[in-house]
Image 1 (tube, rainbow, N blue to C red):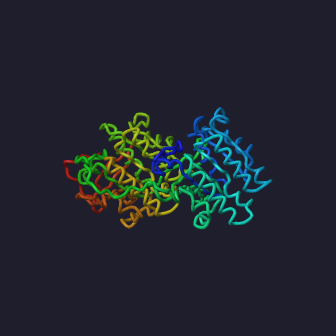
Image 2 (cartoon, rainbow, N blue to C red; image 1 turned 30 degrees about the vertical axis):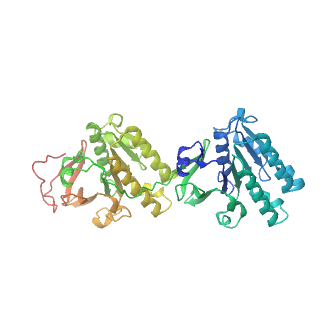
Image 3 (tube, rainbow, N blue to C red; image 1 turned 120 degrees about the vertical axis):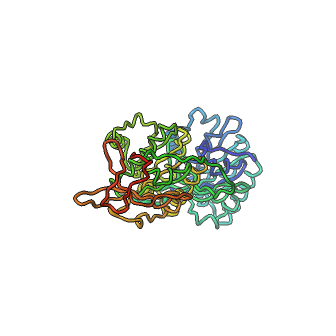
Length: 471
């Protein structure tokens, strides 16, 4: 089966490799959802002089306005207009004679141009010119039959609601249905694309986020890794966090491909431990990525300078995105791309609370974290996620989280009262598949980084194995 590419690989992936050729596809959505942009994206990516595209407007948007706005898109090629792409207006035929002359106009253009693509925008507007529902149904059936007999891919674009799909004639004859929608997420608008039907072809189900850009629709396929049915190999040597005492508390360090949640109130050292992990990895020849949704590069550089480190010479990459205007769908593909590009073996995500803001609901957030842990595990990439807790002197109950069960290791940082001062402590609550030291361990943040110490007055802070020196 021939496939029609959109020019956007991730959208083609959602469609199982592209839209099946020589089919009738309906693009539905409310005004402003990007229907016309998507149709023109297909037109300019596929039209050739030998197999041109015909773009018919009806009565919803003036032809001149459509072409004027299309010129602002990067894929618009003025040289192709009149050679590979032909715009035409069915409005005069519809206004003077209704559907019959419009049909003759379409058929005459098909015979003359022998197009590879035909777009009718808006198809729904055609119903206005039918004498009754039966005439419109005959028009739809007749046109579908004519198009199906030709090696032509047709796009019928319309301002349909998804609840119209089950009762209108257009959708009964359609081979593919692509729905564009939007919904409010706080003060932002989340756009989603869903394939409702794709006859004779597999596709990725569910809603996929997208943005409207000057390059057309940029789609971010829903990340949903299925449970693994086969085994895969992981390295058996533990990875050091760069903190010898923390390694000992974890039973020897972190397993490659594991996921760790590092939780604690603000200021307890979560970010610093994550940076230490990446810095030590870089020194050991393992590239890393620090993905921040909280502190920008200038703030991270200040944190590192405070302990005598230099961000420019750290040996790991930084990906900063503000949670104010980012979708989790978009963010996760940027992260995966950076990990692939830098061949990173360690990833720190700071923080879970900010990442949660980018997800439209708890189910989608859980789905993405699960898929990310599975993806990185298969790749042998070790991931650390930081999580903010509200109780400054909290206990293990503060670690309750909708994704805590997905982690291999849980580490709780907290403040502790020490006579006339406040100290910091770390506790390993869980290490999957390994013994660990569950005792509370006191540490300090010094000008040289984190340093674990022993305070006799603090219960559970007995010295570690003497073979382990302070970090």
